[in-house]
Image 1 (cartoon, helix red, strand yellow):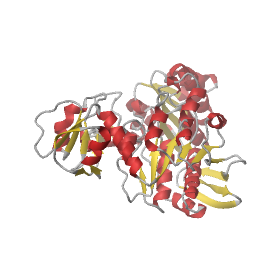
Image 2 (cartoon, rainbow, N blue to C red):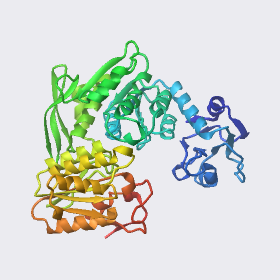
Image 3 (cartoon, helix red, strand yellow):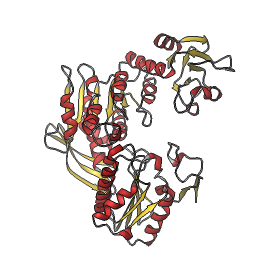
Length: 484
């Protein structure tokens, strides 16, 4: 619940016209308005003021604007501020300040959304927890998530992302975490930084904002991350907890096994070991389970109870979800997005699959700057050892093919596709001709919409006019999706 008195007090706003005294929630997208919400007309790629009428029609009973708007119905409260984005962030920070919830903030180059979801899933079985919606991890999503905090929430889990230097610190000041968790430091968005060391410093900036008596939770297997963490000032009384596969970690996984059905093994803490079974395969999911178990322990959830709840976890859409399409065909849909680290992990998983034919369908990766050629070649070399067939999409994908060919990959088993839609057709041809078990991995930058491959293989197609779609949505949610 958002009180209009809080809006006025926190933002220095001018109440142009009174209306509702409180609002059920906040939104910046008129399509996501619920009746009784407060709409912030934020300036971005589109001017939010252009959508005030749509927001009101959808049920908004209050609007926050930074310029004059006309023809707003009389029952709608109109609040004028100098800067709508700043007002949103100030209000989110104030909501955090009023809350007694213990807040977990999560960042990292890869796996932060899955880790956030798994931590929230574990805690939700034992405490009243608020989790950030989807991957709301930027300057807009974080304050929107904080505005959902209610007095009954005892815990909250927030994802914090970055594309450029300084963004983590700015968001951490809003979140004020009690537990700061960093999954890893890889190559995601490295093109926007001078070096990986600078990227590591940006990720670990989350640590220095932890509250007094808080905890740092780190991937103990990541040397670059731990080196960067050692450079961050650690407030007195702050505990450090490391997780991973290495023997020196505080929370570690041993005897891990992977199959198409999932991952299993033991989690060991202080000499206690508990068996785990995850319904999804992959080392990155085991890391997420370790992080979730560690946070659970810090929040009073026993290792046994936490591990038991993880057996019921299901992956978000397009994040390494395995689907059995037929008796002979399985599809690993990891199409939501692609950093080099996540792509390498997905190829490791593909290589571990017991199948006669393993097809890697890879879209190009983005925001890699001067690292692009080197990282696409690295992925190409990995694909050569993991797949029997390689299909790539996008100009940068050529570097994948060149690197795979240099590793001895057969030219007849490689293809270049104009779009994800064309990649589906090429993949279908390989699947049709394959003998025995076949596994297909689909992965690429969100812009590439690689989900068209698993959708097509499952009998659904996206038949739109765009070979490459700029909508930042999953095609599963597209109104032009057709079922064959």
